[in-house]
Length: 113
Length: 110
Image (cartoon, rainbow over all chains, first blue to last red; front, side, top):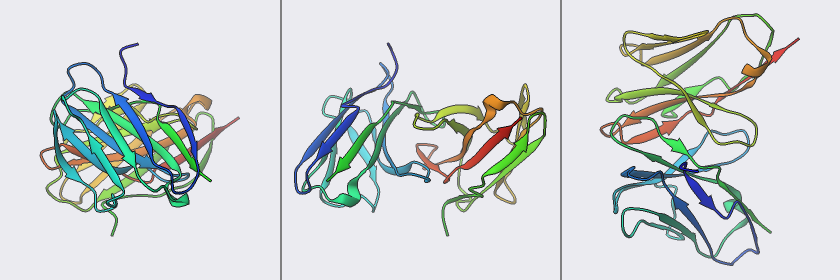
């Protein structure tokens, strides 16, 4: 499968715990995006990378959230001290270039209890 | 004001009907435009890109009006399989940042 891969697919965690999600983009896609989606809403932009550089980070991304793409390939999104409001689908997407479509992974569904 | 605005619907239409969705965007410097389709509990997938000259793909027609900052999607001869949420997407910052609308839900009925 050469699509965008996200792991885990589902994560249930207790409030206050830290979680980390992984995204493997399509090979040679230099842009990688993270989005968050809740029921009835469109995907909400969190951050994006061009190669290993994090170029933009949403104001919605509090200091509990951090994302990395250390070698310009896979990326991780970490949420520290999770809160119930963090419960959502976290979507990763990759894109080969400017003004081109983004291809999404199947997402990681986070439930904070 | 939201960067990308859509009517959330739902639009309930009979099979064979023609339905149109509209979307407005606030950033006049936006450079790329797309319609994505999202099925229930699935990831969004590209339906079509939107160009200033308008473009058509089978039963689907997309239009862009830069002066009015308005994008539309027309679906002709609706099929049951068209039932989904349609997301309007706008690219800014050199087309690098993709901002999604909340989506418009379409239900095609027998």
